[in-house]
Image (cartoon, rainbow, N blue to C red):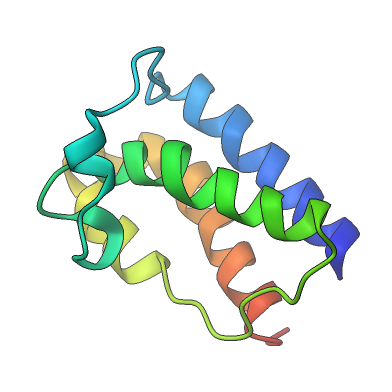
Length: 106
């Protein structure tokens, strides 16, 4: 499964860049310290994906540690990216595949 997850993470990064949702400036340290799910109170979801989710998932993979076995980012992503319309369908599709892969769904 780790190879599939690695591929999906690369796809997620690529799509965030394609959608121009990739930032060169990280959030402030205080924003990164949020305890709210998805840091929803301090950053946009694309920032959470870029600066929290992707690095943490990559660190787990690099350390060969257990990956989360229940994840549900798609509902939040659907809401967060609603204003972008259909153009973010590929991004939502990748997030859905990450959710289902990590949750053991087909």
